[in-house]
Amino acid sequence: MSGGAYGDRGNKDRSIANPDGAGTLVARPGTGGARHTGEAFLIGDTMTGGYGAGPDILHECTVAVNRGEIAVIVGPNGAGKSTAMKAIFGMLDVRSGSVRLDGQDITGLSPQGRVGAGMGFVPQTSNIFTSLSVEENLEMGAFIRRDDFSGTMAQVYDLFPILKEKRHQPAGELSGGQRQQVAVGRALMTQPKVLMLDEPTAGVSPIVMDELFDRIIEVARTGIPILMVEQNARQALEIADKGYVLVQGRNAYTGSGRELLDDDEVRRSFLGG
Image 1 (spheres, rainbow, N blue to C red):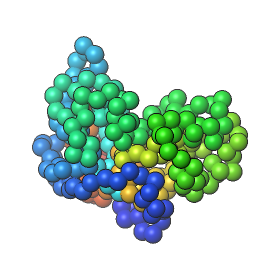
Image 2 (image 1 turned 30 degrees about the horizontal axis):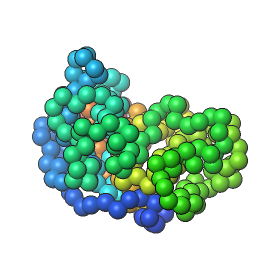
Image 3 (image 1 turned 90 degrees about the horizontal axis):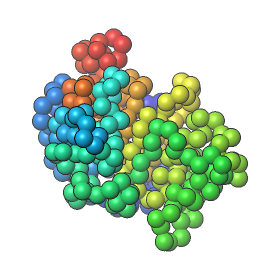
Image 4 (image 1 turned 30 degrees about the vertical axis):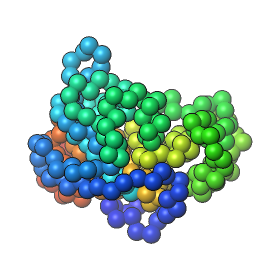
């Protein structure tokens, strides 16, 4: 598995994704203050908020990603990583700050509305229909589409060949890594503008983790921006264009994956030395 630069691996057919816009994200490593995000394709901008009437969990938290990039959110347990992802997807109240996708302010949209706007979201758990076949799971992913989605399904099978082989098998009979491929494939069936993954390698072996990261790189090579929460921080930063370290719901460090891996304080505090 290669770092930051993906080389020639991956499917470069961008028709699996919706057309998207341009933008730049200039990160400042080693700082927790304001970040110069420009017009990033997807940005959760200085988000403060929490669940219902509860206390704030996020405090002026900013994460962003551009087309064809992998951005990774890491940090200790309870740092607000998955909460930041859910805030961007509309699953908790953002009391200040905003969420923008492709230049559009979507802060007021429901999760369903955000899917319609182009977000693909893969939660950590309960992310497939175990009693349905692999192919039926993919068909369920195309529920919002009114066009012929057979071409997209063929592209998903190209990205994940094992799914084509097992397309008639109940998804609940697959291995953990194969289930995650089904979940990602189902999200891709919507032709998303951006793909968000919450702990995609949770509970899988190191070998399967490496395989999943390779598949994620391939998806990014199609041009789809990927925002990912990961507990396996070191391995995730090795493939990341952008990295965000959160601590207690705040940005602690921001930079490229390589910059964060090379930062002594980040390594000592979050990566085990």
